[in-house]
Length: 224
Ligand code: B12
Picture 1 (cartoon, rainbow, N blue to C red):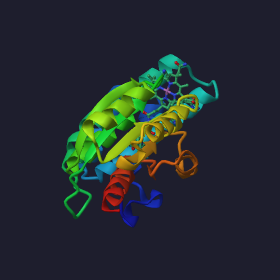
Picture 2: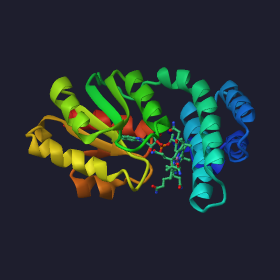
Picture 3: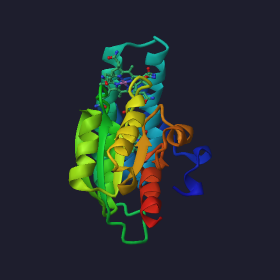
Picture 4: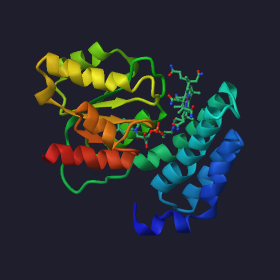
């Protein structure tokens, strides 16, 4: 994203998109997202500042006990309705200058069903020339290790959206070490509770808090 897209001068429609999700209005979210697309706004801004901020606000309310699971599920539906419209544009975005072709195995960790962010990341990785194998959600630690052994990817990506599931990322890194596979693959972690500190603590190689930063990071890791 460029400086022009900074939070200070966001198009008001971006806030309207956030609000439509906070109000749990799926049709309105889709309509406003389409309007933003028609206005030629940067699809990453629509996605990150509009849709993602909206769904995270509902997530925060859920965390504070102000809304419950049905509302959380409705916010996910709103998000998906918007993502569906933005996704074809992400597909056309090529962020890197170089030939980035590398192989990525990615999945959401065990006991965790969140996949919206992972799927957006996959779309953007593919758009940037990566060959991506999506293991899906609730992937047992051993299956990540098995996939590294069988597919020999350049990068293993693990998504974890909950504090109670992020430990699986650490366990997979440990398992890779035990199996003598750790040096064969770069490990990237992501998802709401993760951070650069977490990456360092568990001995992973990469972390990013959104999909375009994740693609940049993947490109950099492959250049190492
Ligand atoms: C939507 C949502 C749901 C939907 C998920 C639908 C789906 N198909 O994914 C539904 C309603 C099903 C759901 C269920 C639950 N949820 Co929920 N959910 C959310 C919410 C609101 C948004 C997540 C999301 O889609 N964000 C939008 C995407 C675009 O952002 P993202 O996921 O962060 O992904 C981006 C980056 O993180 C990064 N990224 C993501 N993955 C990766 C991987 C790599 C390798 C890299 C580099 C980068 C990267 O790039 C992505 C794209 O930009 C979050 C709140 C939050 N703050 O995240 C709660 C949240 C994650 N959920 C939570 C909870 C508790 C649950 C439930 C346990 C609720 C329940 N009582 O049943 C269940 C989980 C069941 C399970 N076993 O997994 C809590 C977790 C609390 C905690 N600290 O652990 C949160 C934080 C809400 C809260 N504040 O309490 N949830």
